[in-house]
Amino acid sequence: MIGVLVNLEGIDGCGKSTQSKLLLEKLEGEGEKVIILKEPTKRPHGQKLWDMLHGKRKATNEEILELFVLDRKQHVEEKIQPALDSGAVVLMDRYYYSSMAYQVAGGIDVEEIREKHEFAPKPDVVLIFDLPVSVALERVKGHSDADEFEKEEHLEKVREAYLNLENDPLVRIVDATGTPEEIFRNVWKLVSEVRND
Ligand code: TYD
Image (cartoon, rainbow, N blue to C red):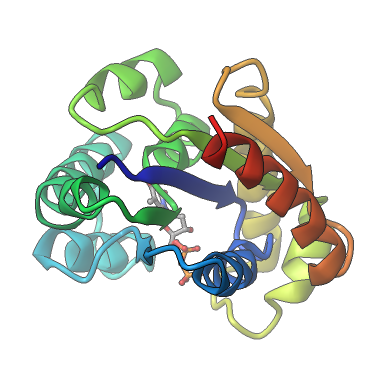
């Protein structure tokens, strides 16, 4: 049996976590075995990353990328590959496509990042939830401690890096400005296409 890997992506506040939950419910309703996995993980590499991303630990962009790769290698071995081997639908709330947006926004070449992830099982589909940065920031208001202007500038770069992946054959750009139900209608259509392959 071989599972299906769906990767949900987008800038902070894009609604991917809500969509993962809706997908989980719908797929379970159809009798599928489903698991949601999130990156960075709660393992030691992931914990270190949280500290770096929240400014508690200084690091270069290259160091951050290396840690994401290490965290992901462990995640693939311990959770992702076993779940796929068991025939489950694996919903990845962030995966290596996050590195191909966030670490690219940090100045690293996208092809270098792709090459570093040759060990990782390829998603069957990558849903990138796209919306204007101002709308996303409005949604996460109160959750962020970063300087708002700095955060906005950074997320603009991340959004651009995501949109630059448009021609990747696995990527589908999903308009994330509607209600959760409206967005889910598209999500379900796109996921159904890969389940029926
Ligand atoms: P996120 O899922 O947004 O966490 P939260 O639960 O706080 O909403 O992810 C945390 C941050 O990690 C997010 O700003 C994006 C960043 N990140 C990267 O920079 N590269 C990566 O490869 C991944 C997986 C996440």
